[in-house]
Length: 303
Ligand SMILES: O=P(O)(O)OC[C@H]1O[C@H](O)[C@H](O)[C@@H](O)[C@@H]1O
Image (cartoon, rainbow, N blue to C red; front, top):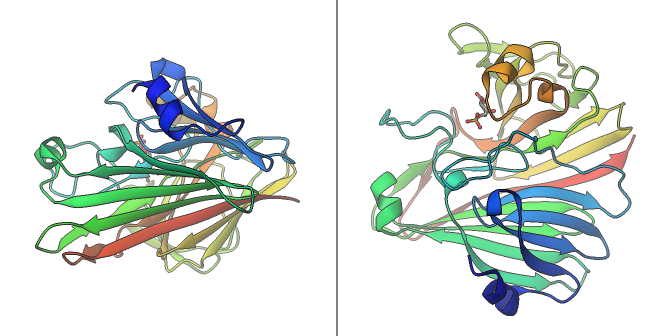
């Protein structure tokens, strides 16, 4: 990407600038009166966000994460689209779709009246995308960096026939010690346990979610607000989701973390994923000419 041209067209003095970051990837650095943030146009991914009054970043990105074209960045908020999880057509395409390892266009940047900063990135179908996924589409992500962080994904079906998607905002939240945190808000919800043998047992959650082994669950009919309670960092992370009734909770724990090249063996202690998704029974059909959204707002509160 031409950093100079991007700064000339989309830079905001003293608030937003384009720079060269890890792996030589172009990054968007934001520092406004309310927060700082780091966004990668490659993958359309928020990598860091910290409100001015917070001691720690909201998000986790590991030292071993890949920062290379064609690879997914493990950390921050990867966008899983147009499928969540394994390739639904079993064609050997990568898990979680292709846009988390794809260049997004910078469409707009803006300083908002409330002091927040807005960034819009997008991908429109072309011959390269259609070689992976045959549909005609316009995919946009709107990111607001202020006293809260919001990520709003919208899919326009630009073709002449309906298509189905599953998708997710696969957020990696920084935690002080995964063995001490709790996820609140899922009591009584049914979940598909992907960590259990066979990966399809359906169980009902009782109380808060705790972590003492690998957790990989798809929760259904979840409430719009979930929270991560973190006694080590003395904070609560609030996740408000829209256009989604399904959430994934994931921590690889010891063995799975060891097996992943882009995670350090101890990284499982440092993050938990609570993902705003449409998957499992929530498959989204988008008619021609129509748009479907998926959105989440994240905030940090003291315990
Ligand atoms: O390693 P990745 O492809 O980034 O996927 C990371 C994880 O994403 C989700 O949370 C899935 O539920 C897990 O099964 C998967 O391991």
